[in-house]
Image (cartoon, rainbow, N blue to C red; front, side, top):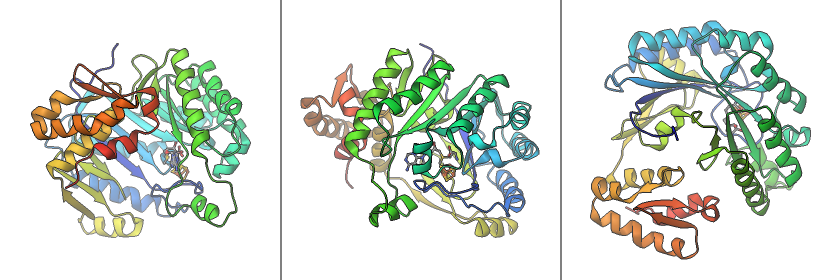
Length: 384
Ligand SMILES: C[S@@+](CC[C@H](N)C(=O)[O-])C[C@H]1O[C@@H](n2cnc3c(N)ncnc32)[C@H](O)[C@@H]1O
Ligand code: SF4
């Protein structure tokens, strides 16, 4: 199997904080007004330059343009961002450059423009091929647009394509959910990310649920869909390399793997987070403040220095989600024997109920445990 974490280097994340309209479930930072786009881009280019020393000159293996909706950018904007990064950072030759795109933006012309740019990986936010699901989520696109956007992407000769889906949507039965997977497999999409619908704080979904205006997601339904998902993907020879991620051999997301293996990353743009293994920092979640501060050569961020316990908890949470699992020998070496013993003791109840297994000092979630990853990790966490 080609999947391995040897030689992973630093990554850069760019946050584009604009969407045509807000989906009811989403609390990622973005504005539904695009009027500040040009000013924001100018500030972003400035931040790229000002942050050039953050990664200590490590070579950049991945760039991820996410959001919000980065497919609202024009080709010239993508070039400006890439050129500014290339000017100030040393880029790997085989760099992975991903852009997130919404189906309604992906017509033939747009796709050819992206293809004719440094971007070499496209992540399309389809969520579902059914109008009922898309309406529940308040997505701007419909099922036909979702389907056509993928057809067009394939016609434009993109190979490294990822599609995002959401399951556990009220009203979505197993048949409808599995149909989404069948469509992607029929089109031979090499990478699929599938997320269980969560009710995030301060979203319209949460407000509507609290006012009894809409049916809330049901955990039992999500667990059934997750089982459907893992069985279906296994049957179709996809590698289940992280809880929410499946790929064909050689198509894993290098950028996300960076996060999961605790590599350094630099986040640029409003609300973006950065991590250099010692500190975590996050930019202000406000477009006007971001622009104003950068116009005065100030990067508006807050930061915290991570304690050993925080780094341990983070490693545990991330590694448990991956196919490699959590390496107990690494915990012993990096965090000390006490935390190694703590880990084994806290994991014991989950071993007994078959939610965790340990093989060759690697701790993995079982199929049963996969759905409860967050709860299991938080029970093993060290509390400071
Ligand atoms: C924040 S979006 C950004 C990319 C793009 N705008 C899109 O909508 O696909 C990235 C992914 O997070 C997923 N997501 C955001 N909030 C979620 C939630 N509450 N439950 C499940 N998935 C969520 C989105 O559906 C999408 O696939
Ligand atoms: S899911 Fe994507 S398109 Fe929808 S509001 Fe969030 S970032 Fe915007």
